[in-house]
Amino acid sequence: MGEVVLVISGASGAAYGVRLAEILGQDVRLVVTESGRLTMAHECEGLTPEDLAKRTGAILENNDDIAAKSASGSAAIDAVVICPCSGTTLGKLAAGIGDNLATRSAIVAMKERRNLIVVPREAPYATVHLENMAKLSGWGVTVIPASPGFYNLPKTMEDLIDFVVSRILDHLDRDNDLTKRWTGDELK
Image (cartoon, rainbow, N blue to C red; front, top):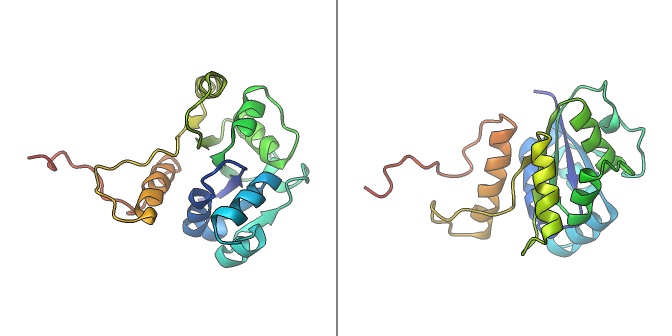
């Protein structure tokens, strides 16, 4: 398995990105936007990108450095995941704007036909968000809204987070047993 670029942008739901980084560990090139840094500190008890990188073994890249490995079409990158994906980041991608490492890495993923997964976390979605998601989906981007399921009867917030992270891992072709999988026998 090659590296995964994990972008944590400024949408609420930083815990999803943090959990994904914990699972993928040293396979991650971590990019955190300025808004992502603020949201992560607020929602994850003061956690910084530097702390997360140290704890997980991820390589932290500077969002201002568009010459970083994550922005290269020739680099051995398997996928880019933006988790959570803010409405602003979604809009930039739908408009083809790669003005920082986060958006540039995603645009490069699209041009190189790499796996690009965006995890929007808005409620409700504005029409422009829906249109941007449809546009990106039409270009082959996988859109996984941060909408946990309840059929596995979650007991904790971690169970809800793991549900979404498990779906992301499925689309990265990474085996995981974070949640109980539906078998079809649950209601019999």
